[in-house]
Length: 103
Image (cartoon, rainbow, N blue to C red; front, top):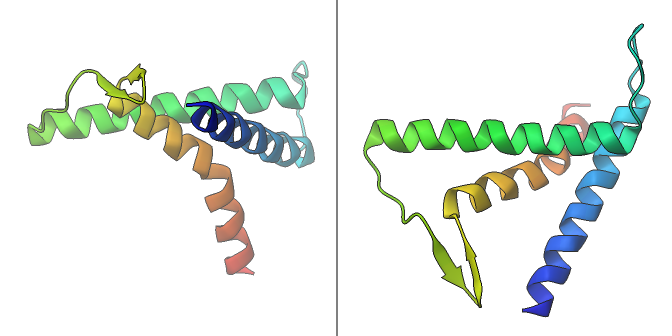
């Protein structure tokens, strides 16, 4: 149980750290500035929400029924939200890998 929370915390930390670094390198226009960490959190939540909506619509279109709640090691969660959050946490590493392979 503790290892799950530790792994989730580390994944969140490293994902936000990489997002913060990527966002800090971008140029800002004439808009008010948010801190890189705030932008990274907004980006993470936005990506996870977009993936959640896309997966929800796809599963609804295909007629696939997932359980609304799943319990695993004493933790109850929505499986679709967990999948969306996992994809959102992996997204900066996949983007970085894509950029490096494209060079």
